[in-house]
Image 1: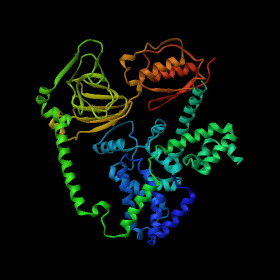
Image 2: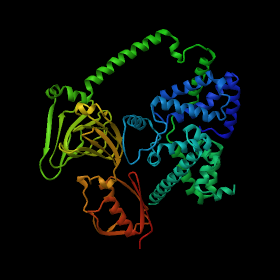
Image 3: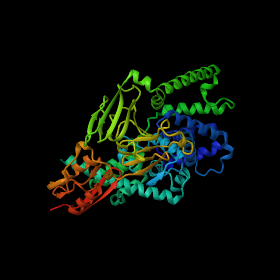
Image 4: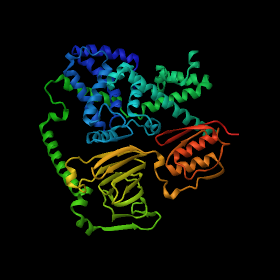
Length: 195
Length: 365
């Protein structure tokens, strides 16, 4: 489930108590965040065990380092960032991924990135895949964090390591492209059902 | 309430309660929006567009039960409350660690053996005689001036262009399929993920699971070229065939190609370059060559010819364009030129996104 504003308040309260060493609050926090983290993680790899491991690691690290987390302002985007970095490290996906320009000599390093990326990026759903596949991965990720996870532009920027304006651009363009495709597809669908 | 009636798809998407209604079908919000659309049927199109967009943004949802999450969290708490314990719960018992280690060792040995015995390029290079004794090598040469269609034992089809040659072992190895190519050929590979398909062409290896693509690899050419039409293909330099003197300064490259991308291997430098190729660069599949000569042909027929020839999808409003007809000879034009001419005739415009062509046009009279 995505996390709504109401849950947001519960998260920040639990976070405060967790920082003071409250294990019950820590458990609540983990329970609320787990599904979101899991779903987000499965966008990077189909290997669910790997995602589960990464989430367990993430929470254990959080607990161990709780005394140094007082400056964290947005717990949710903080855990998303941590999971993302962990997965990217594990999967060796280049974080600053960009689509290759038209013609370019491909270096070996890029190639590894390229292949890991191709194999692990699963931002594709079976039924809707074709439409969303048309968008670059970073656009898809920004849209997901904005609309499914209700993160603000600033928080998305933090998770993806981008400036706020870049996030806004990704989302603006992503929505425009998605709309174009869906309006046409839905129109055709209506048309065919009328027949 | 009244404001919703003025909403466009974009405002619906921005509305948190609308999103909750879409993502949580059991929620109050979902119920509210269902009722609301029934009361405002004229907004149905906007609402449906917004809903479809949101669902495609979410993508496939991995199944995760609440009970499972509870179990994971209680495991986590156990580890947190007993400091000093190993991270993984099963590693608490030493004998399990020992068994796991032993199992890893056995696996590693098995894997090593598997890789050594079945890796195709290695086998081809180190032990060609052994391969020949067990399998028959079939060689097909096309010295005619037209292309020749070859059907492989696995159902894959190869259009062998003139003055080109392929050879392959028969039967294929159970773990992979491999073909040697000299010259130029268009491949339509039967899909089989458990038996990848390798094409060896000069110093270039192309690996696919099931797709179609063109390889141009004449012995005397300075380049080897692979152009992908459908599916995904990975291409790499064959380290066994590259001259050792060249291997030192440049590491062998490899890359992944998607439709309408091409890889060029510059043989002298063992350098792989990836570029986008316009669909027009792709040859028409020989089997579906169309005359492209039209006399008041319906637009649907014309688009169908284009789709089949260039492996593209064309999205257009069939209803609006139902009266549009084309009278033209387009056989020599490239895909881009064809599309431009057609759009000129029907007073429309086109947009090319990957393999999809979107046509916008008014009705014809």
